[in-house]
Length: 186
Image 1 (cartoon, rainbow, N blue to C red):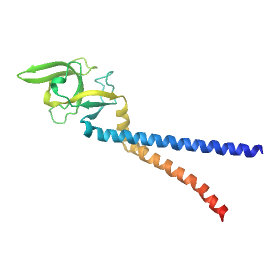
Image 2: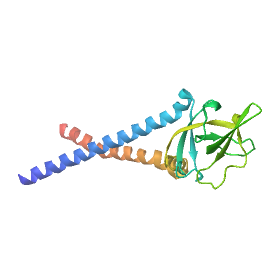
Image 3: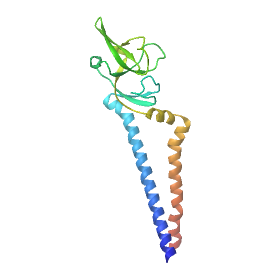
C-alpha cells in the first residue's frame, strides 16, 4: 500500500512539474513573441526607432549594449542636456547617440554641439538639425547584446532550435501514454 501511495505521489509530482514546465515555456514564448511584435510594429505605429548602443562613450548614463528608444522631435524642442541620435553626413558613418552640450543658432539654422558623457572633449563638428534622428526617450540596458547574439548563427539556433527540440521531446515523451490506453482497450 505504501509503495502505491509513493508511486502515485511521484506520478502526481512528475505531472505537476511537466505542467509547470509547459506553462513556463508557453509564458516565456508568448512574452518573447509580444516583445518581438512590439519592436517590429511600434516604430511604424508611433514613429520612433530602436537603436543599439555598442560604444561606451555615453556610459554610465547609456551603457554599451543598451537599446535606446529614439523619438523624432522638432529640433526646437531639443535642449542642452538632452541625448540625441544623429546620422553624420559623411559616407560610411554610423548613427551616434550623444548628449547636447550647446545649441548653436547661426544664420537662421540650428546645430547642436554634442559630447559623449564618457569623452573628455566635445565632438569636433556640430550636428546640423537635418542630421538629427530624434531624442532618446528611454533605454533598456544590455538588450542590445542579446539582440546582437540572437542575430548570430548560434543565437538563432538557440532561439529557434532549442524550443523546437523541447516541443518535439515533450511530444514524443507523451506518445507512450497515449498508446497504452489503446492497447488496454483492445
